[in-house]
Image 1: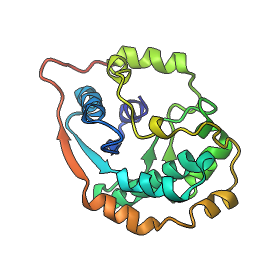
Image 2: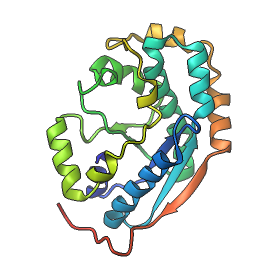
Image 3: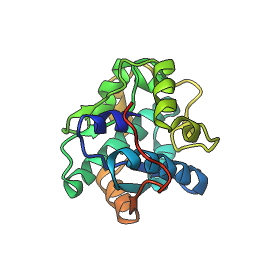
Image 4: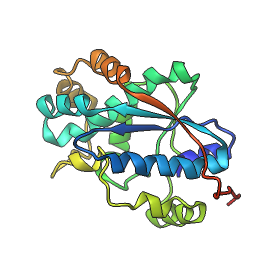
Length: 207
């Protein structure tokens, strides 16, 4: 949905999917590809990066305290996207946070997640509630795909008691055991860039 809203304003989109096989299945990847096919019916063909994220998640599990793992994982996602940006001539990152919707989307968490990157971060859904997001997703044809029961790398690693008001100091301390640059470089080296086209039977409409 965030990508669709950005594209509606004329932003060229390069979707990025973080794939953690064997923690996540090939069906989770197929779900993302199908979502991109719907988006491509509005935008034209899209490049989709499928990031091999498994080793980064394993490193986070080994070294980061449980309440901070999702935050550190999202910070690593931001680093990966920032490293991809020059290859795609990207000038900003687009994410789907809605403030307060989950633990990692408090204002404190969002500030911590932003910190590793200098690129602008656009959040088209920041003020929307779940009802609004679902209604728009149904209207553009992505909702039925998005609720397919295949876990993504975020939902599999949600801690029982996540930190909702983290500080940069504690997150920096939690990341001491992570070699950010090497982890990002290794992930990108084994990632793939796909070209996604709209299904011939699916025609984009303006909503």
